[in-house]
Image (cartoon, rainbow, N blue to C red; front, side, top):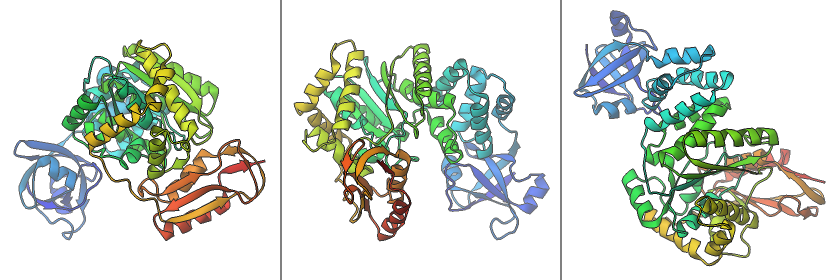
Length: 490
């Protein structure tokens, strides 16, 4: 049946929606939530149906389409499309089976992943898949097949014979080791194409921080060229269509505060498998606000990553690090970028904890190649000789160097209310303070630590300084720190 397109001039965030008038819906026996196949010339897309209860939104004989559908169909306002009813995807049955405790095979997991990638499932259906995986768990064979499905429904890129990669499972503010490791490894002559995420619940992701120095949203062809030229890159992973189902699953997990172990493992390994990484280093920060709050949980994840790496024929090394407090001095994109550049410049005021962790990790990666017995010694030589700084500048130029944004002009010093020793710094509270100040959307927002774990302080010493780009956000955050500063001093 033919309908005339009405451009709704609304983007939904990749949910494929079409709207028809209630009279047309009655005539075709369609209901809200049904799926319809919309076709225009050689293009077709499956949409979730919504129904207009009046002629005001969508009149009879018209079909309202949102931006994502218009783009996929290559259709414009007032052009004509065909529609027909279509069944629910087969993957809905597989999701129901998983809810009932069934172990899914490779074909069933591929169907689900492919439908997630191509937006054929509703948010409710995706949520049930996440919930089923969380409640019922995924066995190792399911994790392996889900990993492969995530890779096979996106792009896969081979950069070279020896490709290195690293990943941290997160939870530690300021843990910007990637931006030091990449230039060190590339300066050593190895390939390290680092695709990084933007922040979801943290004050900055690696991509947010690198964007203060260079462009991170680049097409795949450009990224290949950069890696060929410099040996490394630090880009937003969304640019390369690597394991695209992963980001869509994360979008569902975030509001539910659910992080199914099997999906976490598949998510990390799929991104590494997508770039055909031979040697992968996984960092598991252990601390109460991380995904590994106890040593037992950390060791379990360590074993799982190693097992999956072996099954995928990847050389995977997993380290457990201290995730109980922030790393570095700055929290927020600009402040973290300044920390990274200070370390690369061998500035004596650069955060030594960030420097030493990055050197330790870079050293392990160098040893994994089989070329070095004492990798940390080589990593330190590359950093302290200035080779890593030169390599970072090469990568920045290749990606498109950008002027560092200014720090937020509105500041507030948070002071200690008593003397003593800093026993604990709460990562969650520190991250929340930085986010309410505006990070990561406001690149210049965040906080700069003056006192760190185990430091001795006097009453009225500045613990950290908050930076904001607006008076309103600074006002909001100052109210928060009156309730909790995030420091425990005894």
